Amino acid sequence: MWTSCLSVDLRDGTLKKHAELLTGRTWHGACLLQNKIFVAGGHNNELQTVENGEYYDLQQDKWVEFFQYMDDYVENITLVEIRQRFIFAFGGKNNDGETPSKEIVRRFDSLRWEEGW
Image (tube, rainbow, N blue to C red; front, side, top):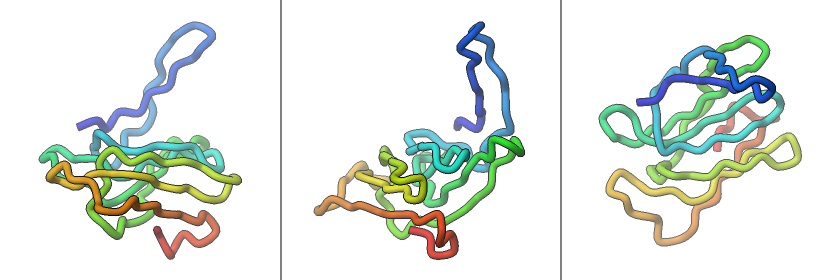
């Protein structure tokens, strides 16, 4: 699975390697909030859903695990930052490729880290 974190210098097209993710994943969601790159959900090496998330601190070049999901619908989720405080997660599929019977919207509040989603 993908653990690499790369950036591209748009001035000259060079790639720079950064710290690797703690959990290899694919088909995950990602967004930028408060100078951190957040990733959540997706699949691991065994193609099982990954129910945790982590963020990359741009200043420290370090990934940190930060929450657990409350459901299995974490493949192909979309993460959106709102008002420099919240992350909303939309959609998702489970290990069997099924979508939930109702649309699931999850909210993460960066002022209440301990509460998770």
